Image (cartoon, rainbow, N blue to C red; front, side, top):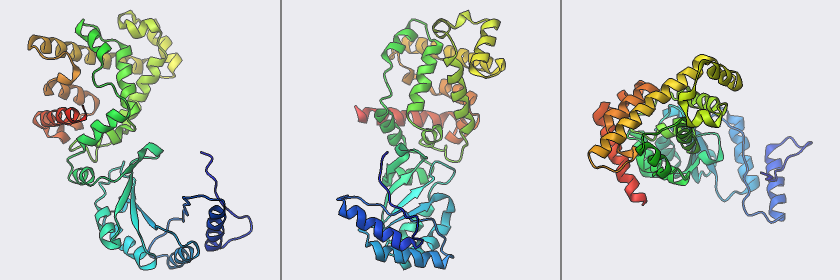
Length: 328
């Protein structure tokens, strides 16, 4: 990123290094200067004294308390210890992509009397998000964040209409290429765990295996020819073996992908016929909840249970439709 930084080969006092670095960058005309201190625990008295000295040496405009969401209610005592040493102006909550809901964040706000400005939901720059009260509380209560999910789809330029794919579906065609395009659209939106945590009741579920499975299938499809992607019926034992060698996976894993494709192809075909019969728009968004439930059960058996069964899934799909209309 070519961001300049300051360090010293001779000086060992952090407060001196920080003070010299800030002075240097001010002289060079930089408007934003970040002093990143090492992590510390409230029981480490010497490190807290050091932090106080750094604050005096640099005279910052804002002191940001960065809290690991996984420490839970211990956040209150940790935040209070920081507040007693320096004037905390704002908070950032990290690691919200894991099992932690971030309830301790409220304790940190209460202890520091400082607002949360950002949250971290991953390890990449796109996972550093502005803090939104409604979305955060909804997540805390296990209700997900459907509005945020639809906004993320819009920002990632995910094609909600899928016009070309819909034409092929309407004519009874759905290929491995279409399946790959759907997976690519999902991957554009960020880590699968972040996406799934936006759905009600999904907090706490482990989607690492599902994410690895999708990546594995993408690699396998990258080893297929154009003809195989467009006409899966040509698949034979020799082709499966060739694809397995090319992708670095076992033939059984290639067969697993083909079985998943057939299941999705059958589901899509049934949905299109049902929509046409009832005069609905030919669109995958018009899938009935029972059809989606079958697909969820195949990807992760716990998903449907955490959503509250088919009724919960049906309510979620209506909410998604409502939020999508707001974006138009």
